[in-house]
Image (cartoon, rainbow over all chains, first blue to last red; front, top):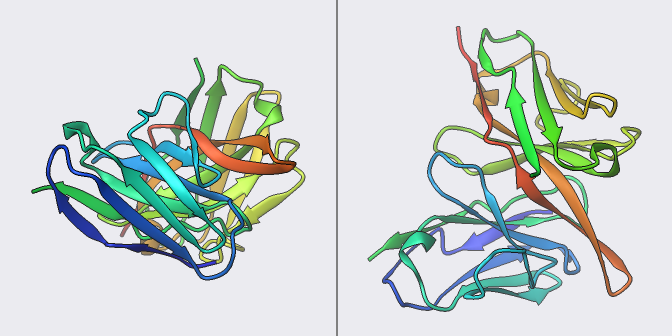
Length: 106
Length: 125
């Protein structure tokens, strides 16, 4: 299953609402996870099962979608949210990642 | 506290071998599947391999199939990745991750909820 994220990069300001899209080449049901990664650090889980917020993740993060089209939304950007975001399907092996979306400060 | 600590990375010549280890603590290791993910310099995340809790079933990316072997020793709470016939394109930071699962609406969902800090593998002559 190929995972395609859009956009590849995004510039936004603190307080903005942003959305990142992830499209699968075939249905992954709701087996879609979102990760955040900062430079030099391991990825962190944000959302699993398309829309379930992982423990400890701020409620400004949300996920939606099913089948082949998914969205990660951040309701009000905070300075610590500037990072790279990846989607990943856990429906069938190989458990592929999207290419990533780099969120930068405008 | 749930922790994963990778080790075993280093510099190796093309065609060489290396074994990575991932020591787990803070959870019942044998209950969970485990995964290796890698990230080449300046590139995105690439899923490499997964293994179920018992160790009986394994999965591999096409890019490493036949060269890498994932295994685990549940008596030592340790995950391994044996890497043979290494190539320059295997150069990356290798992360191990715990594969959590949750039953939602009669369906099991799987996700990597805990990650190690990573170990660096460099394949170069």
